[in-house]
Length: 256
Ligand SMILES: Nc1ncnc2c1ncn2[C@@H]1O[C@H](COP(=O)(O)OP(=O)(O)OP(=O)(O)O)[C@@H](O)[C@H]1O
Ligand SMILES: O=P(O)(O)O[C@@H]1[C@H](O)[C@H](O)[C@@H](OP(=O)(O)O)[C@H](OP(=O)(O)O)[C@H]1O
Image 1 (cartoon, rainbow, N blue to C red):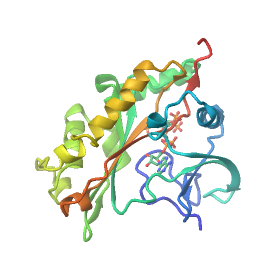
Image 2 (image 1 turned 135 degrees about the horizontal axis):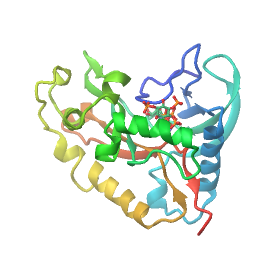
Image 3 (image 1 turned 30 degrees about the vertical axis):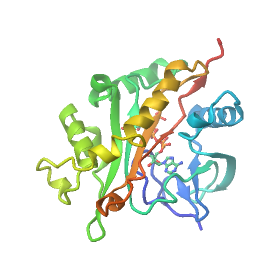
C-alpha cells in the first residue's frame, strides 16, 4: 500500500492536493518527476549513474538504489511518472535525520539567469553563502513518549550560523528537552560524528571521490545524515549513515 513517508524532512511534500513522495511496504520511495526540466534531469542522472561502470562500489553505496521510473497514481490522485528509489529509512526504527543542501552555489551550469537569481536570493537568505551549505530539514528522535522534535521548514530555513551550530549539537544530544534550546549536551557526538564508521569518516570518503571525479557537475544535492538515537541511548551502535540525494541539477561533464 502506498503512503506518505513519515520520515521525510525536507523538499516537496505529498498531500491530497499536492504531488509529493510516496513509499510502499516493500521499501521503495516514489519521487514524482517535477514537471519541468528538473524531473528529466534527475532521471537522466540516475540512468547514467546506474549504468556507469566507473563508479566504485564504495562510492555507489552513498547513493540510493534506483529502480527506474513508473507512471502511477500520485498523492494528488493524478497519473504521473515517478522515480523509483530505495527507501533509505525502511530498515530504521526511529531515525534521527538531517537534510543538508551542499554547495555555496546551488544552480547547475545550464541554469537560466532567472533561475540563478532565484537561487542567489535563497542562498543569501540562508547560510548557503556564509557556510557553503544550509540545513533544509531535520527530525530528532527524543523517546517513545515524546516522539520526534521536527522544526518547521520556516524555522530551519531562517537559521543563522549560530542556529546551525545549535542544530548540529541538538542532533547528537541525549537531552530529551532539545527543543527548549537550553544548550543541549553533545553526549553522542563522538559515536555519531566520530569513529571509523561515524559521519565524519563517511564524509571524508565521499569528499575524496568528489575531489577526484570529473564525470558530473553536482549542484544543489543534499546529504542525508541518519542514525538511531534510541539504540545509542541503550548502549547500542548508532548505525550512522550518510547518503546523497536530489540530482535535479546535476549534469554530466561532456567536455571530458
Ligand atoms: N530515497 C529516499 N529514501 C527516503 N527518503 C528520501 C529519499 N529521497 C528523499 N527522501 C526524503 O525526501 C526529502 C526530499 O527529497 P529531495 O531533496 O529528493 O526532494 P525535492 O522535492 O527535490 O527537494 P527540494 O525541494 O529541496 O529540491 C529528503 O529530505 C528526505 O527526507
Ligand atoms: O530550500 P527551500 O527553501 O526548501 O527552497 C526550495 C529549494 O531551493 C529547492 O531546491 C527548489 O527546488 P529546485 O532546487 O529543484 O529548484 C525549490 O524550488 P520550487 O519551490 O520552485 O520547487 C525551493 O522552494
